[in-house]
Length: 199
Image 1 (cartoon, rainbow, N blue to C red):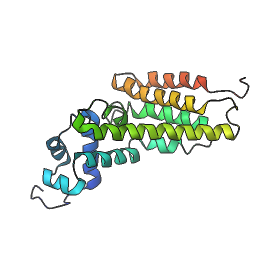
Image 2 (spheres, rainbow, N blue to C red):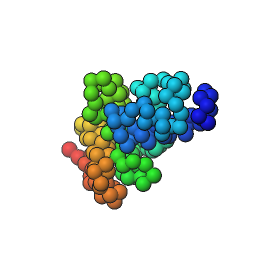
Image 3 (spheres, one colour):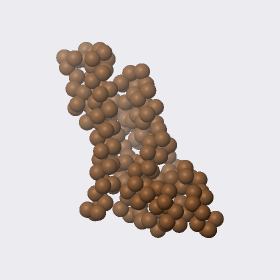
C-alpha cells in the first residue's frame, strides 16, 4: 500500500478525505502533508493524481458540489422560484448541521481569511459564491417574467438577501446553532417573499 504505485487508491475516497480536511481546517490551515496523510497517499502520488494544492482544492469543491452540497442543484429543480429558494435554505440548514460532516459550509468558510499566497483559493470561493447569487437572480427574474413575482419585485435585491441568509446559516451553524434554530430562521426569511397583492 505504501509502495508508491500510482493510482493504487480510490480517487473518490481520497477526495472525500481531502474534502474533510479542507472543510475542518480551511484552505490556509491545511498543508500538503496533512492532505497526503488523510488521503492515504504520499505527496508525490498526490501531485501526480491531483496536481498542486490549489488544483486539488478546486477538485474538492467540485466533489463537494456533487456530494454534501448536491441539495443546491436539487433545489433549483423545483417548479417555482419560491419552492426552489425555500428548499435551498432548508437544505442548507440540514447540510450545515449534518453530524456526519464538519459544521458550516466549505464554500463560505474555506478561504475567508487567506495569506496573499493563497489568494487563488479565496478568489475561487468568491467566484463560486457569486455564481450562486447570479443563479438566484436569474431564477427570480424568470419568476417575475412568468408572473410568479409581482412586476415591482426586485430580483437583484432579493437574490442578495437570500444569498446573505444562505451564507449566514453556514456561519451560524459553525458557531453552534441547532438545526431547529436554523430552520426557524429560514421560515422568518421567507416572510419577505413579495406577494402578488403588494403595491
